Image (cartoon, rainbow, N blue to C red):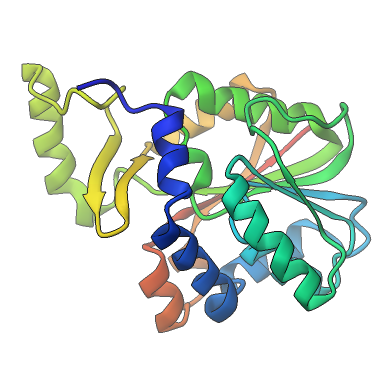
Length: 248
């Protein structure tokens, strides 16, 4: 049994069941109330270019367009996701540019965007801390001075998961952890849509990685502290932490 890999993650996000799930979220959920608040406060409508990494079927980008943001590039490493997003883009008659690219090696020139977004905990679905730092460094590179990188993560210290992580820590100390995992904080488990990987970090870990990548952390706040979400949004996503980091 080998370690979880990027190709395994790509296979998951190319699964028709997963594609349908993301398209349902795009069609029925749209932007979360908390996302609208954070994005509107962080990015003025005059923002000159927003890049959404890990856009999936376009839920966030379509929501941003409907709010009045018109300079949007949206990318994902799954061709299947981009194919669906492009179809919806034409159907809606929006003018968002959808492209396939690897978040660890963005195709854009330095200082191209005023904002970069990596929504729905997507950054933490990239295996390996060094790879997640590469994504942060790429986001930093393509941002202009004073541009913002906004993303979300789960939070390992949340009380509801305390028992799980206490038990997991004991397993790692004994060397009895799932051999497919790369590092403590990883989860790689069977779901009804396939095997899902995600890393669940601590706040200090994310702060350290952002600072290592050159960012200044302006704010981090739990979704539940921003506003009360609809039942539909809460069914779609557990509580998560928004990160607002700035390139100074």
